[in-house]
Image (cartoon, rainbow, N blue to C red; front, side):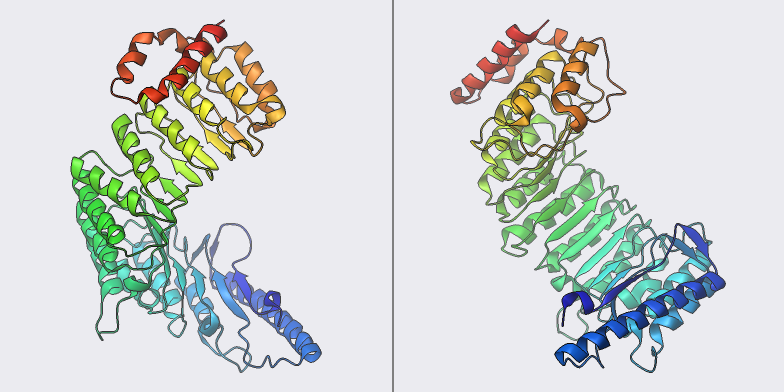
Amino acid sequence: MSAALSAIKLEAPGDREFVDAARANEFVKGWTQQLLDHRAKLQAASENNGDDVSNTMLCDRISLSGKSYTPEAAEVIASFLSEPFQDGLPIAFGIVEADLSDMIASQLTKSGLKVLRTICDAFADSELIDVNLSENAIGEQGAGFCKTVLNKSSLRCLSLCNNGLAAETMKDVVDILTSDEYGNGCIAENLSKIQFFNNMSGPAGCREFARILEKSKELVDIRFSSTRALKEGTDIFACALDACLTDGRNPNLQKLDLCDNNFVNKASQEALFRALGATKHLTYLDLSDCELGDDGVKKVCHALFESDSQLEHLDLSANEVTRRGAKHIADYIRDCEALKVLRIEDNEITSKGVVLIAAAFHAGEDGSTIEELQLNSNAIGTIGARALIDAYGPDGKDMPHLKSISLNNNSFTGDVIAELEAAFQDKLAEMDENDSDGEADDDLSSDDEEEDEVGENEGDEHVDNLADAMEKSMIV
């Protein structure tokens, strides 16, 4: 049977709204018609190819996101999902992917938790693989109300972002995921995706999340960001991440988002660098706002050199990176043949740092692979702007894949902005916060360059000469 006809996805229709029982019944009516129409298509197809569709699941995915359901509306939807459909199996029986995010906005705690329990309990007989509970104010009490969908041995992907999860709630969630009551293994062992973002976990919550990593074996996607980890929590998390990668577990990790953690202590930095060096298939790395500084960025780049990974996405924004750190980023760009997205905004990179990065885009014979370049909110002036234009080449031939470049909140004169617009055209993002006095390059000096390069390899001298040459030829 055609895959396109095997199962459909049900979605709550329309824009964001408050859903009462009457509106929920309208949803059910529309979903029922969708399912009947799909069944008719399956039956028509089966007549042509002889397939038996009597036990075919009509729906395997559902999204209830972006609405605020009353308890009564939740009852209507739960009944639809859990009761037999047209004398057949319940719709929930075949669902493997449930987007239950953002369902209780603006509700009182008691009502909101009742909605969560009612909806989650509707999936009691489902073999859920992917569950998203993000954007629900679960708070201190809510983990138990969601236990039906959390306590699934089939679970592989779990997202709990912006849920207000404090340390105690984290413990409740992690207890469910790491429990091995019958000696058959725990849910955490089989997870491939775990996302915790913008919660209030603190160091104690980091200790709980570390328990998931200690059990993990198959993670492909880890997001642990903006959790108020502080230095103590970051140390705990980084140590667990190090262990779960360097001992051979989670060998297929592809995505790692650690934005807004605090890698200041030597212990957390060294653990992070070891973990990165152990990756083999990492394609996405977000270390923005992690207080790495130039030395930390240097070690991150060196760890990536040592790994077998080829990143496609690298974010080192908001790490107080200067020209010194930019040099190591440039070295990595030159070495990485797959990089598509580079985000290094909200740093302290001057034009000389941008010259180094721009020179790295010239390294490939077939042109740079970069599709998105973000350099907003740095200290870039005329020299850096013209270096990027030069790297782009006539009609973009040296950066043929570039889709967008962001340079807002730097220091370009009107003439230089005109040059950037002429070169990059609609690929250049809005420049509404640019400092038009163009004085950023006035603070450059040869002294800081000599100081920065102490202890660096002599092989980098040709890049520094390029920076000097461009400074002399381009200042107007």
